[in-house]
Length: 196
Image 1 (cartoon, rainbow, N blue to C red):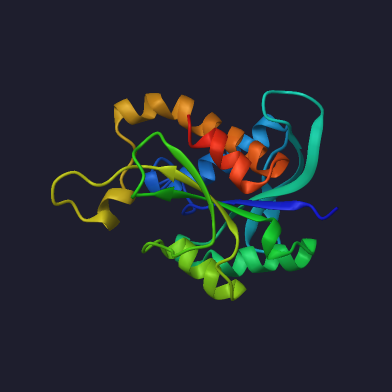
Image 2 (image 1 turned 45 degrees about the vertical axis):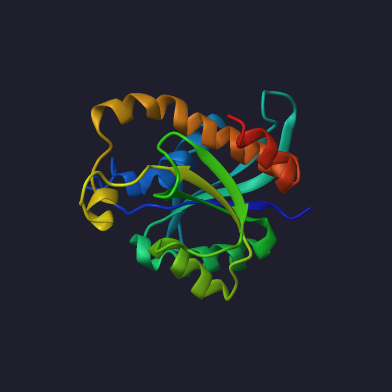
């Protein structure tokens, strides 16, 4: 069976590492770490690793996957994602993109397939490069900016101190959601994850 490609979105470099916009990359790093792997440079302008996904809640190793983080800026994510899919011969229906989501409360994780990009430049780039919106998404809630703060400024700021403590729960929840998504079909996984 074809492997999965799980891509965590973010911006490269230490200056962006703690930004809200990088939560997808944080999830990918944790997923690799849980599988005992380290993301390494790949010629597709990404860091990636081959892993075996575990069944949610422990158990026998699940399907094989490539977990990756584009080494480009967010708005250029599509090129590396398309290159990884071509290199590993992964079809769009086995692509899972993990990204930050303004329209979901901080701490919540939601799953969906397809739909709009909601102004997310990483998703927009991937959709343009693939020529389809029909891929799975793990949407990690970061909440709306306070007051009149511009959304672009908000996503490029680090999580605040309270949020950073909650990341110890949020990131593992997103990894568990990925495991459920590959073990079950989308509606069954949504029924579990959306009840958390």
